[in-house]
Length: 199
Image (cartoon, rainbow, N blue to C red; front, top):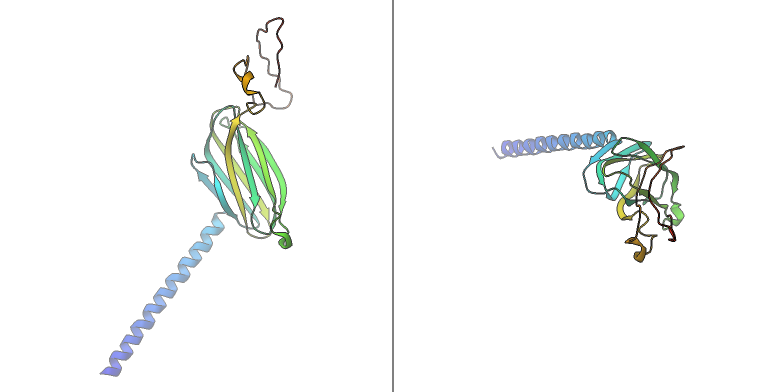
C-alpha cells in the first residue's frame, strides 16, 4: 500500500512539474513573440518621455503620439546611447497639421573599450503651433540596444536671447513655421527716432 501511495505521489508530482514547465515555455514564447511585434511600438500620452527604451535589431520604430506641445516654446529632444553598440537614428516629427519634419539623422556609437564616452545629442525644436505632435524615433542596428530618450520643455523661443528689461517692450512676437521659398509679411507701425532690434 505504501509503494502504491508513493508511486501515485511521484506521478502527481512529475505531472504537475510537466504542466508547470509547459506553461512556462509557452509564456516565454509569448514574450519573445510580443518583443518581435514591438519593432513598431506606438506610445500615446501627454507626458513627455524621460526613460530608456530597448530597440531590437535590425530596425525598430518607436512612435510617441499625442504629445501636447505649446506654441512659442522650445522643446529639447535628448538622446543617448546607453549600451556599447552603434546605430543610425532618425527622428521625424509631425505637427498638429500633419506636416512632417525630419529633425535629426546621425550615427550613434559607443566604443566598448571606452563605454564612458557615449553619443549624446541634443536637438532643439521650436513650436509654431499649439497641439498634439507625433515624434518617431527610427533605429537601424545590428544588435539590440538601449537608448535614453528625454523631451524637455524649454523657455519661450528667443526669450533666452532677449534681455529681461527689453521683453516688456516687444512690438511684435510671432513664431512661424517656414518651408523653402516661403515669405511671411508682418505689417507693423514703427515710430520715428526709435531704435528697434530684430531677433
